[in-house]
Length: 169
Image 1 (cartoon, rainbow, N blue to C red):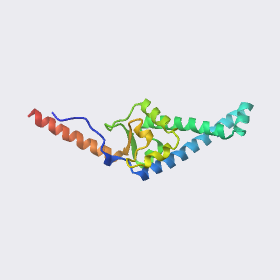
Image 2: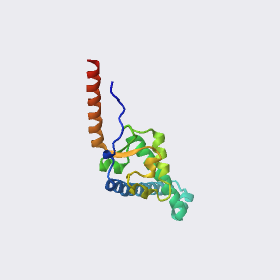
Image 3: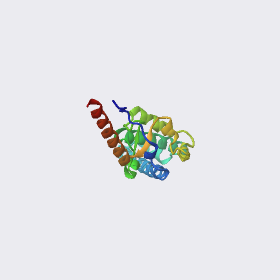
Image 4: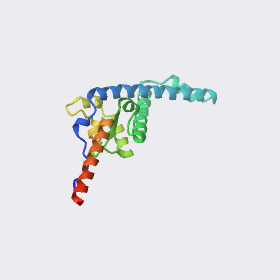
């Protein structure tokens, strides 16, 4: 019987250009989400006369802004990747996050990926030779082209099916 464990091939890795585009688009989506949340919160605070929230929103300093940005970033990546297997930017660029076997990682792994993004200078870590960032290597995940992965998985399973049939004959 043939080996039936698929392992990701480096040729499937998303290009550095795709990774940079994913980063830029995700930052734009995160900023839009923050703006929408602040807008909704301001409307609700005005309607229900939550003066403390209105005061906090109007006097928000750099530290508060950074805390909100970090919280929304962790939420955004964990939820989108946890449920979809990819962020909104990855959806646009046709890339997906998988484990070494080409499968969707666990929700906890996506949370780990999100938390690793808080490491200082992490955004530059994927510019190395491997093209994988620290949030990839620490969480044992890979960003790959979804169509290429699907084709490779199909070929792999067809090959293994033929090998099993030949072994049974």
